[in-house]
Amino acid sequence: MEKALWYLFVASRGGANRVRIVRELRDRPRNANELAEALDVDYNTITHHLEMLKDHDVVEPSDHDYGKLYFLTDRFERHADTFEEITSEVDAE
Image 1 (cartoon, rainbow, N blue to C red):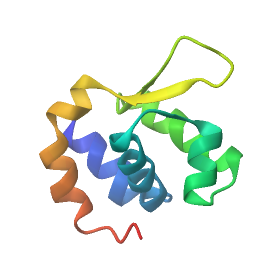
Image 2 (image 1 turned 90 degrees about the horizontal axis):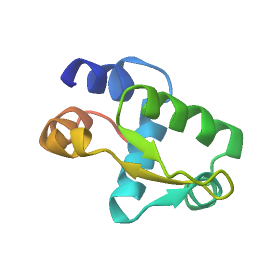
Image 3 (image 1 turned 30 degrees about the vertical axis):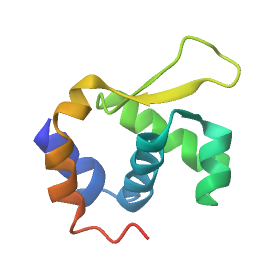
């Protein structure tokens, strides 16, 4: 998981936005529209990042298609300290 976190949040373009998405989801589950609005990022960009985060087992969607909520995975939560260490190098603001 640590390698995936380095890739997602530091080594690839868009890492700062993915950090911001994870931080929003820590507060509460949200759908793509809510994330786009809260982060002032285009909806299509948000869905791209959510797909990447899903592919690397950082987020998981609810079962509903319309207004699908995204949650942080239990696996990711077990690596929250690693996420914080890695992202301390990323200016996500």
